[in-house]
Image (cartoon, rainbow, N blue to C red; front, side):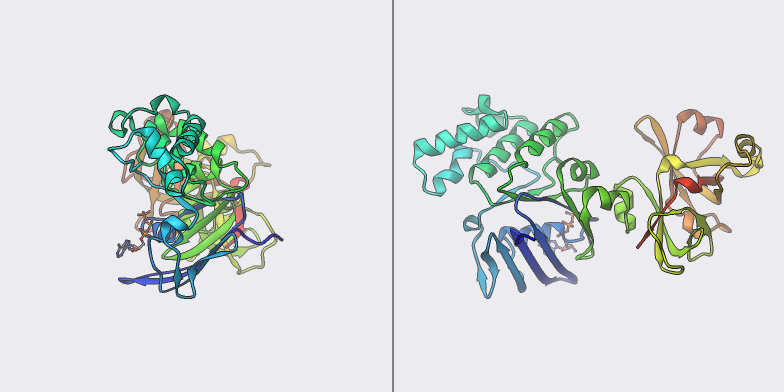
Length: 373
Ligand SMILES: Nc1ncnc2c1ncn2[C@@H]1O[C@H](COP(=O)(O)OP(=O)(O)OP(=O)(O)O)[C@@H](O)[C@H]1O
């Protein structure tokens, strides 16, 4: 096992918020840091960048101690580059000189710094803007230049804080592709803070999920998103997650509902478990239509279905489908709260669905994966 390039143990308390994390990343690894608002992601980045001075922390990068033993290496001397949501370019410098700024600060000659800057601008497909001022760039172009500026200092650790969040939907995919290309440098370690599961899937090798200042999930991206252990991760992965305890046939929730499913690994009865299923696996029917529509499509060999009474909470367009969010009815099980179902607009119209309408959620047991929690 190789020594991690980045190792960070951070303990920090601030106005009622407590952060306790232990993070490591290998050289060349791209780590996505996910978590709800206020979970502490930016605080972790601030500590790594040297912008925050945690009371109790030990951060090393490539064997160098950055924070710890009463030492705090200042931001510019860390070998850490930070790309924030906003490009934050120097308005009075040309694009080329913005990018050359880092190498100049590192002691390169003017011509050498300009040569390097031109190379990085071409790397991010922005060499044609070299002579412009930042005010003459679009948001997407400015963010590309900001990426070149960050990379021009050749950081050992690259921190990306929601780098696509401020971009419009047309500019984000191009920059995401570009970032994907530059992140393939095996010499650099990257920590990417994002709300977007697509960023994690496309760019990251590993996902760390934070909640209330602590790490609650850590693993290979696909594994974490496919087998979420927390409601937050399930939501960002676009999956439903119902918690409970393991039973032979599936998961028993705290309200006594048993959700039939298929266990992903062997689970001891009574162990904490979660039932995970995609919104497309949830069929919706009206409470008062009887079982005929389902019975018509079921034969004797059909897999068992879970039928749960619920109430429509909201209906929102979601790409080509309508996403229905359910809530618990007065007498129904609480476990249906927040379950999402994707329906065709035609089905929504035919069933005359609207918020407040009692429905039944029908979920095929074969599409419910049961994971340990
Ligand atoms: N400068 C500050 N002074 C005091 N408390 C702060 C400061 N900045 C953030 N906090 C608090 O620290 C906690 C963690 O905030 P942080 O910004 O790290 O979360 P986050 O996960 O990055 O959230 P978001 O996704 O909303 O950016 C929150 O409770 C926040 O209110």
